[in-house]
Image 1 (cartoon, protein in one colour):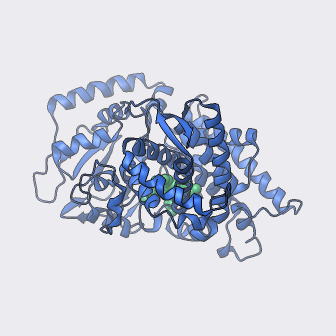
Image 2: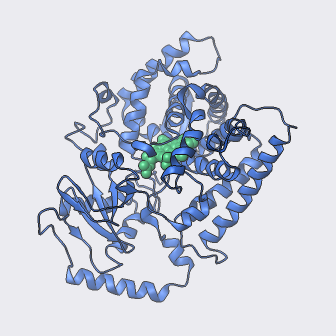
Image 3: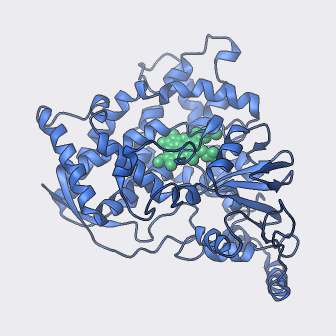
Amino acid sequence: MIPSELFELTISSLAASNYVPIIVSVVLAVLFSKALGIRVKGQKAGSIPGRLGLPFLGETFSFLSATNSTKGCYEFVRLRRSWHGRWFKTRIFGKVHVFAPSTEAAKAIFTNEFVHFNKGYVKSMADAVGKKSLLCVAHDSHRRIRRLLSEPFSMNSLSKFVTKFDQMLSKRMRKFEEDGKSFVVLDFAMKISFDAICDMLMSITDESLLRQIEKDCTDVSNAMLSFPVMIPGTRYFKGIKARNRLMERFREMIASRRSGNEAQRGDFLDSMLERDELPNEEKLSDSEIMDNLLTLIIAGQTTTAAAMMWSIKFLDENREAQEKLREEQLLISRRKPESSLFTLEDTNSMSYGLKVVKETLRMSNVLMWYPRVALTDFTIEGYEIKKGWHVNADATCIHYDPALYKDPLQFNPSRFEEMQKPYSFIPFGSGPRTCLGMNMAKVTMLVFLHRLTSGYRWTVDDLDPSLEKKSHIPRLRSGCPITLKAI
Ligand code: HEM
């Protein structure tokens, strides 16, 4: 889904503006605070240990430096947890952040969504993705918009998506295999997940149009957590311009479909427009449709692509799991007429495949934590959270907790044969904001794993484990280049 709200000011937005004097004073102040060692350890019962440092600055620079390293920004969290314990607090960009590490905390946060916790309002995000986006609207609108958006993402509605995605994927994989050249899985996955989402939402298949829209969506995504000033050259400026172009395109598309000159396509947009004659409560306004088209594309592309990349990496390192998965997929292929497409029903035969998907999501933590703001004072596990603090439900900590997952660093899909403890497996979040595209993401990964393992073996051409710098989603810096070989 969407990057962490910790990135409210990005390094690039600082660089893009004339903030040199501020940066210099900030550096001096950080050094000063380090020298003083301003630390607020949990002196009194209920207070959360951690280091807040100077007002505003806190540990902003340590956070940015972790983000800018090849260990990834979760290293910032990992280090502090080793210093302060499982619960800790810190200050970043002037806001106190608490990292909440447990299933109990996740439960408390998710079950009190909109009551004691909510997503923080970020101006640049609302400007870029739109005020009517699911990510920005208030509680009542959220419930209504989400209800009206949901149907096309239910498992039953995804059968057309599955076959279309399989067709697209088989063709592209075959081409890579025939070329015999190494290709970067992340680039491949970013492109195919974007194309598949745009096809499902709006039946867009024209290559040059897709690339123009993709470029604009990337600019919007980069602007979401940037410094909101309209200065040419900044991320924010580019993002707002890109948003305007996208809204214009979506508006034209909606008008053209309403004109009645186009055949029904049976896609997501058609299903929204079919509600035109219904009362207001039962339909979305045009701006609600357009803002959420943009939201869905941005929320779906990078997350799904990263998960696809990690599945290849993990299976490459765990040949036993790879062979077990291949066996299951070959059984499915042998049962079907030659060159027939994969169907939604086939996913039901992928019991081990589904475990591979889950284990990939557990280990990759595509979204590392889920940020919320406390709307009231609130206590979890005896720890006192103050109104206004940012509380991050730390999915990575939960997914790597040895008390919940034996040998958590080991990729072991079979561990999902056992029932999971509530809130111990939360790659898609939970509660009213659970990922809307969860089913779509799962079937996309299942089709991908099926085609990959039933048709090919692969070699990873760069084994460097370094992570991409400045990324809010953990991704390999190399993008995981591979070469395919047909079985
Ligand atoms: C492996 C892929 C994916 C992962 C790991 C993922 C993860 C998540 C998570 C954790 C959340 C909740 C965040 C929070 O509580 O703060 C979320 C929300 C969301 N996701 Fe996904 N997602 C994925 C794919 C998709 C896809 C394919 C789509 C749609 C095409 C999508 C659309 C959304 C939307 C619209 C929300 C916001 C829901 C709301 O606020 O009501 N996601 N996603």
